[in-house]
Image 1 (cartoon, rainbow, N blue to C red):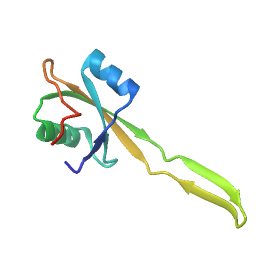
Image 2 (image 1 turned 45 degrees about the horizontal axis):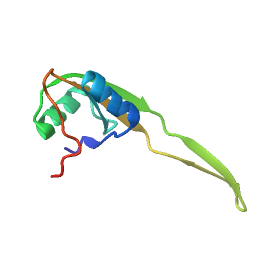
Image 3 (image 1 turned 90 degrees about the horizontal axis):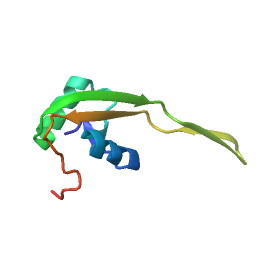
Image 4 (image 1 turned 180 degrees about the vertical axis):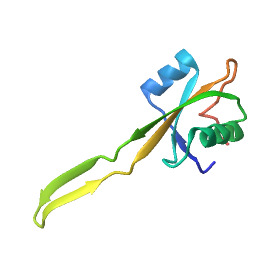
Length: 96
């Protein structure tokens, strides 16, 4: 379960879940599609039909302070959109 960081809870992700049966997760940036598929199947006990991945670059921000220009950045993210076999459902809000 270390490959799956957390499910994405947003308006667009919920819309895709209702419309297509696709679920979105933030995953480890080094993980490939086969590893993600096996991790979701093991964690949630469902059959995965398709995996699409997206890599988001780090966002850079800068600000001027008394000490000069301070530059920082966020971490690189990878998002996976998982399409399940028809009839399968993941209950993301279930309390373990």
